[in-house]
View (cartoon, one colour):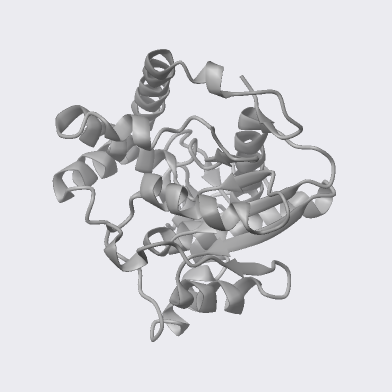
Length: 274
């Protein structure tokens, strides 16, 4: 991540420590963090209109534990400034321990026992969301938006697999917002490369926290995406990130046309933007 101690391209004052793949910018820690906050805030506002004082939940996934921690930390900072409230939905006790160690002083955690957790495939977001629905309905309060920790890299890999092996996958796990009961499922990091999220986690000490918690949890290998597709994704994110943006955007547009999602989006206080 060292960039020869050049000055940050944005602030022109601090030493650059990271080169962003999609823009080529060399960033200091402060500007990297600030840019992720802006992108995540934009990712939320592009998908859902939230009332003042809205309740937002971050869905913490074991298979995306680093991304979940980063998202929860940044969203809590965003909502502190905008009068909102944040909680974290956890489905696994080990994840709950890690999230609690990092975030408990700022963000409350809600454990949801999902149905047939032991039978659930490794990282099947569609099944996870469907299993969440009964728990959300029995909470006694409304969550306006549920934010997932999926990144642009995830959607690129999912859509590649959809084209090559599983056509239905792109519909099941789409970057488009989805209404579930009174909540809207949103993917605010769907325009951010996985490398940027891990860089933030490294400089903020999140990866160190995970190492300290290695006895209770480890970063889970995603068995749903083949190593070949992961290698393709890594190569594109390094050398052609702009094509990843275009590819995911085009596939999402095609999915929207095919499924006619507009008919599913009713007017509500928290509603998808379209």
